[in-house]
Image 1 (cartoon, rainbow, N blue to C red):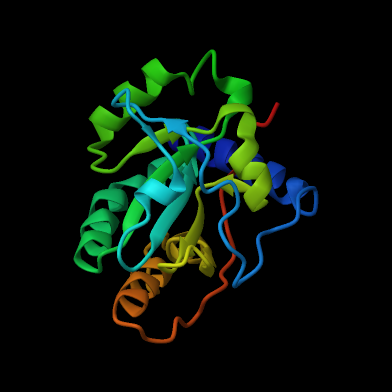
Image 2: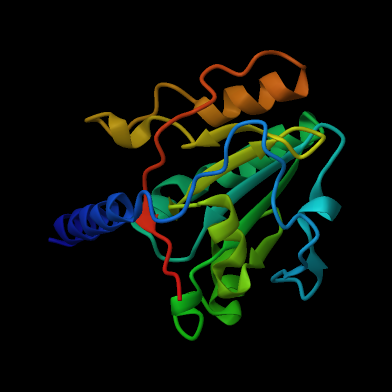
Length: 203
């Protein structure tokens, strides 16, 4: 019963994410990260901007949250992705844009708690009034955007093909390959994959 309920919630989230498509223009390849100087509060109490988080070879931005079944199904890979990003000299940040749930499941207090339980090893920041999500055209949690050292977009979409397979086992690790390609100055292929997840809860 619990498994069926989780699948139902996931299906609802997916339908909502698909309904959102087209409301905000999706950031184009080669475009510079918008609002890169905007300060966002982290669960540590510090504030970061995309500019300050950008590393020698670029920056990985993942729009995420605390409760979406898709995030919960993927977030065990966040620490591993952070390790790969560090190895490739790429920064990484998780962005919570669920402003509509800021007084509940996506409050700072709940973000701190969730990050600890999930073993996050990267900054997890609040996008107040979902301004960054709107500027990116971000649609789902999770939704991945990878930038080069000049903060120009080189990859967007999904973490892997887990939710495209009947087995729910990943076979093609899109983001991992993109990180390694960016870090070694190789071509990223594919660079555009289908984002899957729950809709971002905007105000």
